[in-house]
Length: 130
Image 1: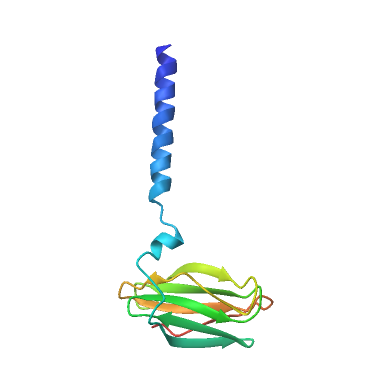
Image 2 (image 1 turned 90 degrees about the vertical axis):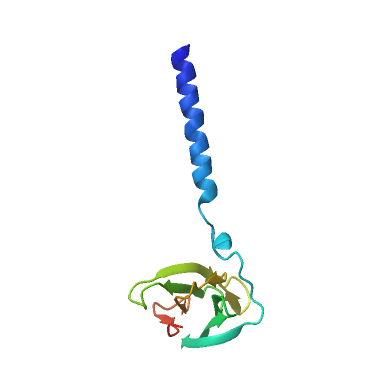
């Protein structure tokens, strides 16, 4: 009986630890917390296969926008070392219509760029780092 209680106690503790770890893993929406899209301006542009890609910025946060066709992708990259390496954030697809945008991310005083890809072509285009 005591072995069973020990097993169940260990199982419960493992389940609680797993739940806590899951709860603190940030989602894209949580990463973008504190960002809004008001007072934004386009700070960099790129294009590929007649698709327009923009990096939008509002003073604290940046996000990507693409004008194209369903199936096209847009995302933002954030670099902490001047563009030598970067992390890709919020890959977003145009599902319907002719445009879509990524979540907004705090640039934390670092460089950001927007990248995009026409759904039926292999090439990727990115704005300049900003």
